[in-house]
Amino acid sequence: MSLLVTGTVAIDSVKTPFGEQPDCLGGSATYFSVAASHFTDVRLVGAVGDDFPTDYLKIFDGRDIDTEGLEIRPGSKTFRWSGCYEGAMNEANTLETQLNILTEAPPTIPVAFRDSKFVFLANTAPEVQMHLLGLLDGPELVVADTMNFWIENTRLDLIKLIGAINALVLNDTEARMFTGKSNLIDAACDIVEMGLDFVVIKKGEHGTMLLTKDDECFVLPGYPTDAVKDPTGAGDSFAGGMMGYLADKGKVDFATLKQAIAYGTCTASLVIEDFSLDRWQSAGRADIEKRLNQLREMIQF
Amino acid sequence: MSLLVTGTVAIDSVKTPFGEQPDCLGGSATYFSVAASHFTDVRLVGAVGDDFPTDYLKIFDGRDIDTEGLEIRPGSKTFRWSGCYEGAMNEANTLETQLNILTEAPPTIPVAFRDSKFVFLANTAPEVQMHLLGLLDGPELVVADTMNFWIENTRLDLIKLIGAINALVLNDTEARMFTGKSNLIDAACDIVEMGLDFVVIKKGEHGTMLLTKDDECFVLPGYPTDAVKDPTGAGDSFAGGMMGYLADKGKVDFATLKQAIAYGTCTASLVIEDFSLDRWQSAGRADIEKRLNQLREMIQF
Image (cartoon, rainbow over all chains, first blue to last red):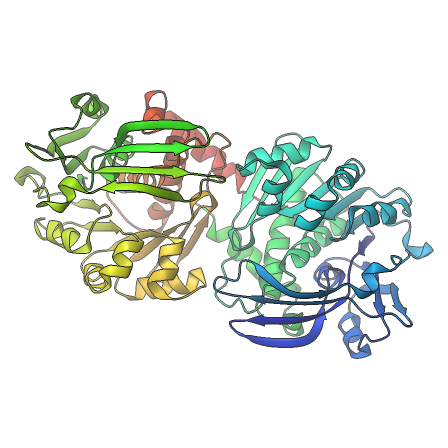
């Protein structure tokens, strides 16, 4: 099935205990689409300014990623994020955010993309996510990401969005903040009851929890890697792996969803082993499959 | 196989978002032995003062717990701990510690207990753990618990202890502090290389990681319960379930160890659903088995 992602294509500057990478390729739609392209073909919707290095577009070459929806807007400046990670690197400390093009009109969705059946609305203002969703022609599965800023500042918009989509992915801190529930299962229940088919709560190195509207629960540890260099993009790569697998299978039953989350987990575990998207220079679907089998083996008792 | 535990029998005062319980039964050896008694018979070694409410001893009645090693020392005062939990309750804030009897001579191990083959040295000064270990006659498996205080203040004693035992259980923060490694797999490797057969790293609600000297790795999420009331004793109950199962099976191969950790996980998930050890008034082995099956089902993909 066709998979569409709307999100950012960005220029990041990242510092971790393992080094520093100024002005590297980043953005939610970038991480998502490269991750998802290991499973299915991807339609990318985003916008960059004319300051965006054309070299960076090469990441999409040779992959099943249709960039017709990637607008290069003259006179605009690309979204930039700068952050650092310390210690266990579980949380990014944002040093600077230059919204730039994100303060302008959102990108449009090409007519040829509007029949997309599987859709991922990467993190942005819920109002913008709602607008983009409105441009689509009967998608079958719409999953959105969000973050603390929108939970705190545009709560009602987010709740409205939830009523119009199938699922939300967010991290454990955000789930607790959103619901005011300290217990994560309680929080997940509350979010599903807002009108979702399912919620996926990401816990960084600690893995993932899935809860469905039928009270089906799936818990999975993270894939244990000792080679973490830069966690940037882990969440979007997880979502890319998950949605890519779902779109490829063309179904969203509980069994497929669990598989998809395991694929997302293993996909994300690779990208964090190098800065930016550099890990995909050497890693591919075979590495994801290998880790999936290892992970399955590592949780058996 | 015979299972011995050395640790504290204490009076706790606990406050959580779900209520307050002053002067309730606590202590590492208490939580451990009741948890382990669901699997095997337990020999308890500890000491309390003559202020200890005799009513509290009833917890051991009707269970396979031999309290010959529980010394009631005239003129001494029982160890007291007071703490509170907030929000997600992942960490206890200690309000007050009255060491009392813990500053005196450690309890002795009854002659009849000295042939114990499976031994758990609950958290205390590594020097005391070493002393108690020295009283035993050829144990087959010795596992110790520790905490940040000993890692920071008696590091060399702890390293010496590690050279004399088979395994250590500790939490993720402590593992990182002990090794200076932010990556948890790195930290686990370093600890095993100090001379252990295996290390078990507890991550609270996020579950457990096991690493063996043969580089075998097992990761397991916590059992997801939405009924957490008081996390006190979770770690010792985990260890009790784990060691109880191992002692019952009488072996410590990787497959048995993984099963044991799953049993420990489910045992701990019960005790935290009420204050003190109250949950064991209604819960028993059947509940642990039920959760084990649910957990196995919940991680399948």
